Image 1 (cartoon, one colour):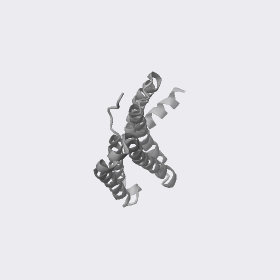
Image 2: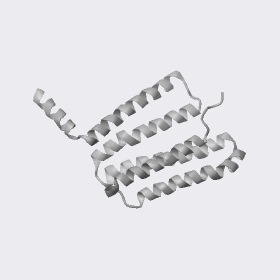
Image 3: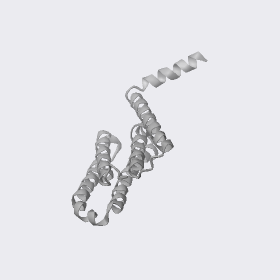
Image 4: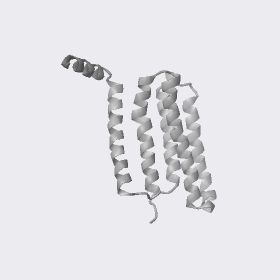
Length: 167
């Protein structure tokens, strides 16, 4: 059974992740060096150039090689998302922002990537497919809570005060 996804989908997804990283690091400009958003834009342009050039060269290699080449680019993009999370937490000491970044960016993108890779590789057993769907719902819930806490941190303080009053 042929997969509906082409291997180049993973390269396109990696390009989107690099562009998202560029935008988010630009929005958080005081927390990152000024060159970081531009580095991510160059990485996205490199991926786009890879797609333009590889349409002639990767036909020779077949779908298996195309998958691994594009998958490696996606893994590099995901590694950069995790690296930004570690940078915020460890080097900058912004643990709260790193927690929000983890819930709103790192966890959902890794989970979505795992979902698409499992779909592509045709490992669609009932248990793994159900687990990935549950994971997607949980990641959306965690991302919503992270965004809510980021926008209104006083809500968390009120909840903790009420919990202490009840005791």
